Length: 310
Ligand code: TXA
Ligand code: MG
Image (cartoon, rainbow, N blue to C red):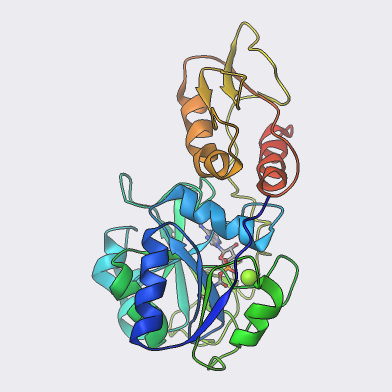
């Protein structure tokens, strides 16, 4: 069950930022304005903190999230930049441009942030409230728009309160956002740029790759969504002879999503356990049952996709 908060709305200022940074360090999500929309920010290096974003939003599936950083130097510790990516960041950051880039191996980002993908969406926001929170928290922040699943993106603190009130501890209020529209997202790959989501910036000064012109990949519908390369069986109570069993709760397994049956921990560890099972020297994977409801619904959605024949 979702924790119930007496949601505080605090006017942007030193005290609100300090309170926000304290919550971030404790692994809680905090709503904060950016120049595009209000985001629901959490420590991107903590799987459990990021799982609490999903818990608060009631999102029935895991989408990869955008990581926010202060500077290009911070971003280069997380993602691989080529010359084009560096040129775009230099020209448009801080600002409403998100770059999808190869994830650096052994970087600090929790695997739930990228939903197990080998690429990461990253941007340096311009809004002083989000920048102050990044500075005070001293770590990269994952932040989707601060709305409950299926609701429209919030451009005012009141929108966040209407949709997430009681589900998060703090909303930092700095009035309406400047753009009111989520950031432009482009994927930077060897073959050029692809527009993944149109947004406030339309002319990037670079041509789009053939086939990518104007094409929009619907959020969460990306063909690239991580799926293990081995057959995966759901609802397993014990391992078959050739299976690596990912347990949950009392069903021990070769690894376990959460020995205590905690869904926040299970969400936080899901993609690591899947990668580990894929690398194990057994040809198939089995997963113990995970209860539906709350984060369980998102976990099961991801597991069903991983189990689907392809
Ligand atoms: O303006 C914004 O970008 C706001 C503010 C808060 O910064 N954030 C935002 O985040 O809109 P969110 O989580 O609502 O949207 C993230 C989008 C999704 O459409 C997701 O599919 C895409 O980014 N995305 C994230 N990682 C990706 C990846 N590795 N490859 C392709 N798309 C990715
Ligand atoms: Mg959104």
